[in-house]
Length: 386
Image 1: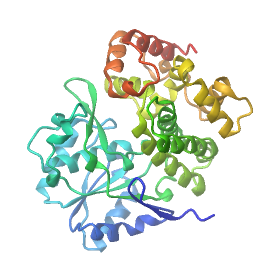
Image 2 (image 1 turned 90 degrees about the vertical axis):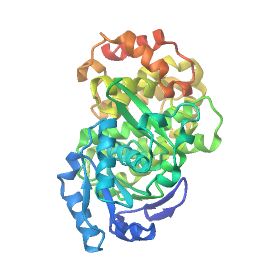
Image 3 (image 1 turned 90 degrees about the horizontal axis):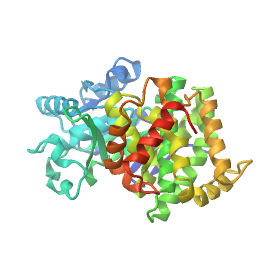
Image 4 (image 1 turned 30 degrees about the horizontal axis):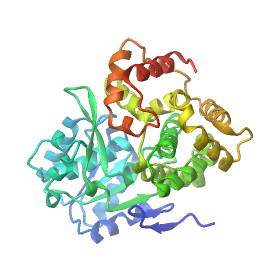
């Protein structure tokens, strides 16, 4: 089977090994003559970014780079990117990297032509209608991790440093117009990051499947996304040079972010405040929280997870069989069992419970948990009580 294709759902996607070579052509097809490549500081120091800039430069498109982005990007990072974009008179954005870089880049592309502050476009009510769409720049997304799926998302998660809270910035046109899924860009990803980002992809597909809203197309995508994670994440973790596994995990990541237009849930409702307060890796947080949130939702999701267990062909079926598979997968990927293992204690449990209940992702949880319940789930996850 050939693992090379062109797709147009949910946006135009070029998938296949070596397709980063098509980036200059893509820029020209979108009218970009002077694009700004936005990535994170870690990637900026790697040969793949230098090689990409060389490609752009050789095609007469320049080699402009912005990389002042934190692991959990902040409003200040977005403001700095906007300043760099305006100063260079750039006409398009190449979002290159993991979820943080992609989220920041999409927010910069949104904000460069706006006259309101970033937080005026938080995904609350109809705030998105305040955006001046004609001020937005086109975006080409090139993910280098298989986790967030931000390359097919219409929003960015940005930390408000003043409030210590992650906020979702949304506009329909934040969806990148073109996506390059090239597994060769992910082969150097260390095994722990491969595991954490891959579990993030699983969390997106899984929470989308369990969301109570009606979206059969998203639900079908989510089930197959879970299967791809089951089949290929252990392979990518064990052998980072496994191109087939890397390609399929990029696809599973894009599928997760496509599916979660059906909704997210308690994993993300807790991971967002924890990321804002502790600056912890988002995918790792979801990976640790996953079984605790599943257990708390058991009565509302047991039939869905039984169907998923059947589809996956798990040896043991039902909710218990699915939960067992999640725990075995986490163990195989060397994911810590409790949040205490990554330095998070329960001193802020009440505050985190309140923040989780108020998080937009909580609206897609199968059960409407109150703050006390979220605090309890958090405490269980800290101490590994399942």
